[in-house]
Image (cartoon, rainbow, N blue to C red):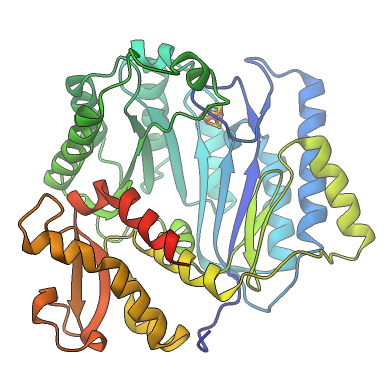
Length: 418
Ligand code: SF4
């Protein structure tokens, strides 16, 4: 690798508690019910203790954190005092940059105004609200634990707390979701003026309630053509409303891209803490156990070994593949000149040979036309047939929306290469 500073300056903290499990969700969570009692708060305190112990065994590189992301689960179910303890531990151990982006995922119906104001006092400056849909019926179909009115109340509270940097999450491709319902959700989302909107396409995971229910044909899931239309519609509505489509599933107003998530897509290092959390430190990827019990045992083991864990480093092939797979999710794409300087010309030529068929398709005027865009050092697009030397290409990116829609196929081709 080149001499880029790859000391981790980002931390993901997984807070696994949810009131119930949504029918599409396979995340590592602990269901606590709609009215958590004192026993549940003891669980939470125990979990936070384990997280803080884990933080205190992490390798240090002398660089303060620039982004922190509390994801879940439903982090807003965690009492503020517990959250404060995690932030204080991170600060004591790593230091937190005074301009750090500190985000938290929150769900409607799980917080009040005081809680949001307390977040601000803790330095949290970005919230991401799990809306998923502005359709009451769809919220029920998905098994969400909140109503449409809870969403309106939540956004009102965010505004009252003067948290200007907020994001709304939406899902397309849901069962019984029509194009019109999707358009309506997008329009309502933009009307609230969030700085950021994430639009995820439903992935049917086999272990979820949806995965079991909607196996086979004749399901109420939107057909592929409609799902693709939903993707194009999102782009159109959101771009018209002033959002930049900066990543396959993410849109932001200028200056409000999620700095934490960019770290993942740019294949940079980051810490991860908590059950099921992934980390990428010192070229080692690690995913923690997905249940609390196993996670606690893992932390005990970590302490017994003074923080040392034996797990493999990424190989060069892993690095190349991750750089491509993650970077091509971004509208700016990946830097081929960096791939060249980090891994050599032979790797560049392999990538090139894999993409050749897409240029051939383009020349034949087939559907795959203009899926992949080559950018030169001046930021201008170059037609592949006009290319004299591979090293003229500075960046490689997928077009929007067609290249993004086709990304699975392109990425599968690249995956087969390394
Ligand atoms: S609230 Fe989020 S993490 Fe929790 S079950 Fe629903 S989708 Fe999963």
